[in-house]
Amino acid sequence: MATREQPADLYDVAILGGGLAGLTLALQLRKARPETSVFVAEKRPGPAPEAAFKVGESTVELSCNYFGEVVGMKDHLEHDQIHKCGLRFFFPAGDNSDLAERVELGPPLYPPVPSYQLDRGRFENEASKRVADAGADLFMGAFVDGVELGGDHHAVTIVRGGPGGERTTINARWVVDASGRAFILKRKLGLEQSNGHVVNSSWFRLAGGLDIEQWVPQDDAQWFERMKQRGWRRFSTNHLCGQGYWVWLIPLSSGPISIGIVADPRFHPWERMNTLEASLDWIREFEPQLSEALDGRADDVEDFLKIEDFSYSCKQVFSTDRWALTGEAGAFLDPFYSPGSDYIAMSNTFITDIVTRELDGEEVAKRVDAHNDLYLSAFATHLTFYEDQYVFWGNPAVMGAKITANNILYWGANALLFFHRKLTELEFMSEVRPDLERIWAVNRRLEELFRQWHAVDSREWRRGYVGVTDFPALIQRHIQLTAGFDDDALKAQLAANADLMEAVTVLIFNKAAAALGNGAPGDDVKIDPYKVSLEPDRWEADGLLGGSGLTVAEARQGPAGGLESCFADVVAQPALSPR
Ligand SMILES: Cc1cc2nc3c(=O)[nH]c(=O)nc-3n(C[C@H](O)[C@H](O)[C@H](O)COP(=O)(O)OP(=O)(O)OC[C@H]3O[C@@H](n4cnc5c(N)ncnc54)[C@H](O)[C@@H]3O)c2cc1C
Image (cartoon, rainbow, N blue to C red; front, side, top):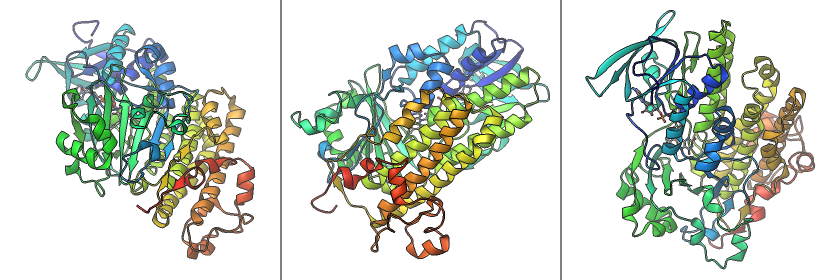
């Protein structure tokens, strides 16, 4: 893959690891500043296998915009990967033996801003070719055996030809760790930081794929008519959710489907899924329709992989000492909303900004601080989506509200700023920071409210459909990603998105509070969205009611009008017998 037999002595940037993060960073650096000399060391000696390779196959809007437009692989995504039909979720109904009975949340059609399912082997093979074509030096079969951080340059030692093979040391002004869970720099620099989110996962690829629409009687017109076209659901990232777990179903362009269990061990012990046999047994118990679809297909199972307690944070990701971490070498959240590639897009964009400016002689200390802060703050905010929350993963009322609010935050903040190429504009970012802080703060309050709501209302709902497009403000946030706002319009939009989050919080609180014995406060009482809780004896001391904020009537008539379509009690039927 390398265009030269031996690496040069000196590079501008050495990237440790040529996976998703390392390869796309190499492409981005060469596009942003073509004269940058880039060295990439990847320990795998040759091309990756298709399908049964790495995990991380579902992508969402931000990373697709990055891979397509920033890195320049749109043609590959369109022709060689699967154009996906959004994220789709199914919540439990009885023993889960009838998909049509389960409350469904997902788009009725292909969302206008595209996203893709990635066959990771196929993608990385193509990215490797493009890295070489772009003039970066990618060395396959090059194991990074040591890094010495220095004054003007850092030294990176690689070994080629297996253990005991040829050792070569190169120097580079910048070193970027993209080695995934090898954590080369993170360990060396003591940057490890655990977070409170504990989840485990195991997965396998199934040759021949499968189609969840086959699980529903083909004459169930009402169920099929939710979608603009039959057959589209299987191109979504389908999530089969239940208390403490979800199962992903991701079709791959090379033919197989990726099937994975993600579970909180407080509800589903690791031993229930840490072997293929145990996983199949677990699937039989919790997802019987999937189990039936797997029956008799043992020979189609292409691999089995697993990972325990996979979420972690990081103390710092970019440094004025000219090192940086990207991808899983830094921090990793949770795959529920497929944010892994988004964080690669963001960290690579921050790194490209810092590195190219520094190479051009600019003082970048302020940028390094600002980018670290923004990256880690966004990460900490997104962590609240998951930490301690799997307890209500099977509650469609809470999850309908949660996924809606989380999508507003995603499309209305991070993704909006990324699509408009603003994350690295320090002045702009400091001007919009107060609105970002509003969004993050109200989100923290909401996530706590969701747990409280589940504790007082865990009713089962049947046959409901939350169509995503039925809540106008939500689908608008998706469409606005490509609006091409100028600076003033973008600032106004971020402020409007913070207003929307506040209004949505008031309506969700109102819905949740109805489950309390005394019901919710009236429609004309001001509710402070930053003070919501389901602890009525705290309301007065917290100043929840009658002060600042907005009333339910104002929220309904204003930005959050139509949110009702996301509530299970509006769109679904109560289960006849309790769970
Ligand atoms: C259960 C689970 C599900 C996930 N699902 C999704 C999803 O649906 N969507 C999503 O976007 N993300 C998902 N992710 C996250 C996704 O897997 C990661 O974001 C992504 O794979 C990270 O890419 P990377 O390049 O950082 O690491 P990797 O892809 O692991 O690349 C690191 C590279 O470094 C190389 N390397 C390691 N050590 C050395 C060394 N010493 N010398 C040279 N080379 C070395 C490796 O060979 C490898 O190629 C998921 C993660 C988990 C745990």
